[in-house]
Image (cartoon, rainbow, N blue to C red; front, top):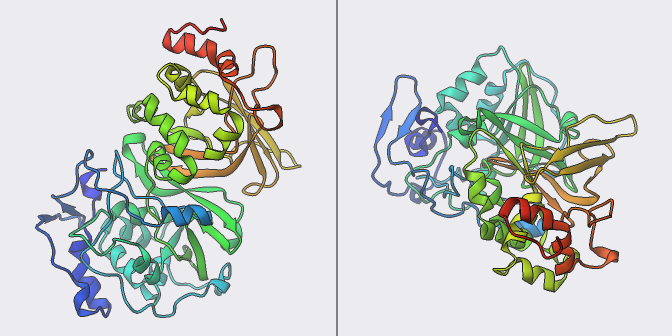
Length: 440
């Protein structure tokens, strides 16, 4: 990220404290740092972590979030997760805290601008003060010539963000931009949106914009699986404001995301690490990737115990590498894209890293249809990552066995054995690693 886009919360602590009544012990001693306030108003903290420094995960609710289906993942720099901390607590008075049962409602349209709606809100004072301190985004919203939709975390949401109060500073410029989407998106319009591009651009990935995942859960609209739209949305003359019960955090890279969910994607993460494919993905600059990540249960259902042990043995490394590459596609493949017929069905083919075609089929309305990849059901789709997108599969993708027309395996047909793995992956192992398969 360019230095001019960095934001230190420590620099706005004074203004935030003036606007909000805070307890005496909420302002902690600030560590040494240097700040240079440029003429543009952007703030630069010279003590920022380097790309190679990783200080740990930001949220402590990954396990619980996974069980609830609402995944909270860590903010990441270019190579990993960094703790998000600040020198002050979020406001202790929630004001008119939004009620969950208000989800999906919208107040009568007003002639106010989006940024004025945020400024006058008594439920988002913390987000408002952060926004005022970040000139780039503030000026964008004040311009008035374009429409924006802003997802505004409530004061309650900031208080619930673990570890947010313990540090001398943080990079929130990216976080703020990650809450803003160009265009006017009402609550009804969000229900079929699938994914939306934010104004946060990834300069290391050719200017590609980070995306938000919009879904409909049991309690209403959800953003990125862990932020729920609550309270009454506001419609202004130049856009929409939706309140969230969670702070949206720019996601980590695909490999880091898989690693952060050990209870769900532990086997696939282990496979990425063992084959060093995660590092291979890091070396690709100017492009994004798609991971079709089988769940832990999928590995057990698709492959025999002997087959799994073989893949993770020294002898099976070459076959494991081929199998992992079969699940990776260059470029971001979102399930909401592609043409569909009047019946809501659509299909397309993409090529994985082995050059083989993988079919993606959608059956049903956008955002709610059944999605299958090579006949394997997608249980969680369109999970945003810093370098692309991740989809969780209910099965392991495999090329067809010699003489077969489909690669679907496991389930009622029986789990794939070592011999079956070698038969299906042998030609890729030979081409990619120069290892002769016993079946060739």
